[in-house]
Length: 313
Length: 124
Image (cartoon, rainbow over the protein chains, first blue to last red):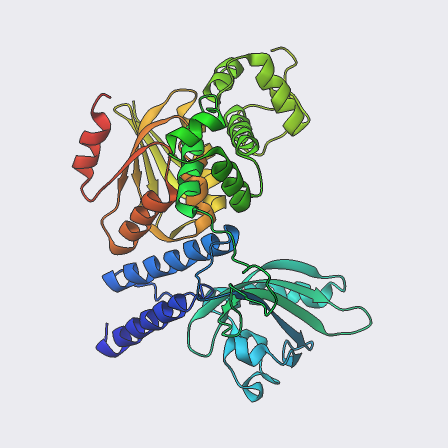
């Protein structure tokens, strides 16, 4: 590999790390398909961005430098030759190209290699199906060379031959005007946002997942185990996961039981026991409540999950 | 007893009471692939559990949903998992998966197949 191309790959890693430090986890570095150490590093950096993005947005854990998240919507209108006819004014900001570079350019020019392959496959169907309307992931190539995966809705428009492509990306933006602690001229108390112990809740979450095969300890026992109080535990868990501790535990163990029934031949009574139910009827009742069919109604050893099987327990 | 089975994403073999699961070249560890590999492995194993040697050398990419699904649901009826990975990409993906996917089965990564087998053969 020429040193010049390696330098380019290293520079894209520098860029990625700067973007991530700024709170932007939407980019990805393009892979070269080589099997060297640098590629391993690129793969790792991409995985870190993916993981952090999920953490930041799912759990609401936000770096204290940033107070606003913006939804960036990118919209393209293409003609029947898939040339960009029109687009939203903010597109040049999010992808980094000038308006002149976008206008009347082929849409495929702004897609990654993998996505342009996918795009070429769907060009035909888009044209001959007047009702075409599909959503899937496409990866855009920003001006900087970095990749931006986005969920795109591609649709034909009624009373028009044009094609609409709409995608949404979440970007964290710094807003210097906002201040989490606001003091009014009146004697109103300062409004300080509640802080949640993300690390503690993460530990609790992991503990629950690792112990689905036993009945869940009471909140009192859990708060003693994690050296905190019941309120912090219950409140914190609900804040991050939008559900109660017990509901989460129950949902996860029933999901696991469902998979075990589908994918294995283990007797139902054993599966109940393996998923924290000491009494079979409790298991069967909870299962039916969750899935609307009894455990013995589920077809065994069928990865496609068809319902309907033997009627004896 | 040796049995050979080939699927879209991997090769499977049971030998010496160990399940050998080898990803094919250019395999992508996304949720569809992981689901398929898991159900194929379970079909091969019947209702018996085995230690598994998971050869990840062929992997070329992965995503979070694939890694997380593998960690949470991919190792039913696996007693313990020895991951074999020595090339740069495979090693990074394996290490990341182990640390952040947090599989609920005993998992260790090996750059040497023999060491992996010793780990898997050891009675626990």
